[in-house]
Image 1: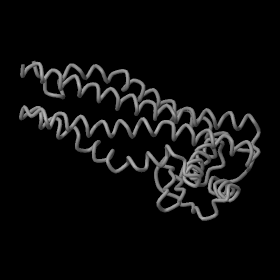
Image 2 (image 1 turned 30 degrees about the vertical axis):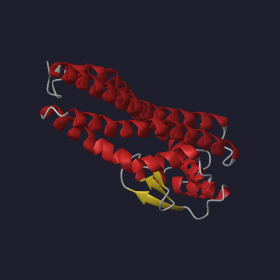
Image 3 (image 1 turned 180 degrees about the horizontal axis):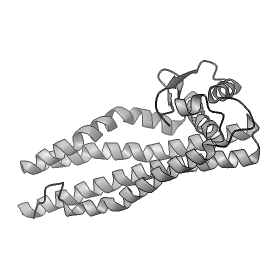
Image 4 (image 1 turned 45 degrees about the vertical axis):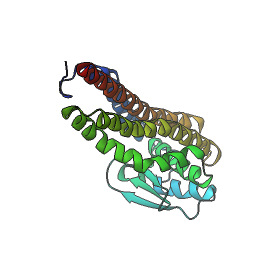
Length: 233
C-alpha cells in the first residue's frame, strides 16, 4: 500500500535523527550561553582576537566583518572574509573566542588547500540543487508512477547527503586547528582552552545530527521507492 509522504509510516526512521538534532541544539545553546559568561583573560574583543589570529597565521589579506544574528559566524572563501555575528564580534568571552578560532581554522584550511574543504566547496552547487529539488521530483515520480523520476530524485538527494558526509570531517578539523591556535598562538590558560573545546564539541554535534538526518531521509526515500515498486508488481 502506498502512503502519501506526510503520512508515510517510514517517517519513524527519522525519529532518532530528530531527537539527536533537538539534543544537539540544546547543547549548543546551553554551552555557548554558559561560557559566554566567562570572560577570557585576554581582555580583547572577538574582532581583535580574530585580527590577531589571522595576522599570526599570515592571513593578512582576510578581512573581518560583523553580521547580524546569533552564531551566524562563518568564513567566506570567495571573498576571503571572516564574518562574525553580533554575539561574538564585540564579546570578550571564552565562547566567542572558541567560535572565532574555529572560523579561522577554515581560513587556514583554505590557505593550505585542505582537500576535504575543496571537495565540499565543489559539491555545494549540486548539493544545493539536490536538497531543493530532490523531494519534488521524487514525489512527482510517485504521483505519476514514474520509476525514472523516483530514481532521479533519490540520486539528487544523495548529493545532499554526500555534502553532509564531507562537511563533518571539515568541521572537526577546523575545531582541531582552533584549539591549536588557542594554545600556541594566543597562549590561553588551559582551563579556557577546555571551555572553548566544550563549545566546539557541542557545535560539532549539530553536524553529526545533520548527517544522521540526511542519511535516514535517504534510507526513507529508498524504502518508499521499494513500497512503490511492490505495488507495481
